[in-house]
Image (tube, rainbow, N blue to C red; front, side, top):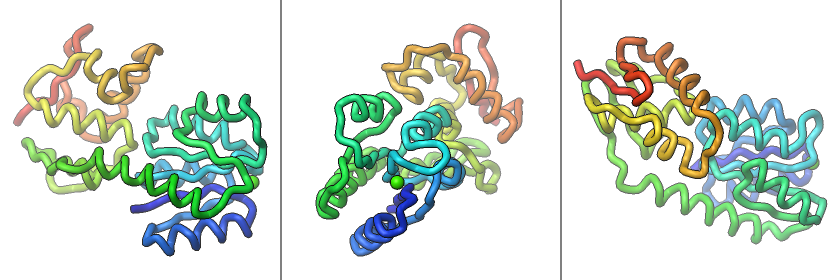
Length: 221
Ligand code: CA
């Protein structure tokens, strides 16, 4: 289990880090938003504890960008401000949970544990799938092509995992939107095209066949 803490106040950050480490959770700590975006792209965190008030881009914006980038880790937002508008804005930005400062460390740990449990439940029973040149391990969130590990962003990983699970069969655009971006997605499917393009750049354009207007198919060797 690995958690990212985004908090600029050293004292608070240290307290959070010690609390989580004591629970046996690996912790990465960053003090500002841009850094958080970099970290969350490089590492698939089981949860992100995100302070709202940060130097540079604030927690709302960080949260929004993480979600836009396809980061699906549970995000727990921290703020000193107590108000319904902030709470709503946080949830609108894609946060899963909200904690108002000052809070008890035990309260934060309980919330983080509950999110970690949820992440763990979702992963349980997922076995590594091997099809043709591809191997996908959902539990570890790792994927390989011809034995070489692929460096995929979260949504690219989800996309590949779905295509590999259905290899040789067409997966409709609607199904991909439902399963990778969840059903409440109401926006354009341009995001899907962008991600397919990015995935093709990583695994080779021949690996995925486009069925125009219908969907995509991962080709079996
Ligand atoms: Ca702060």
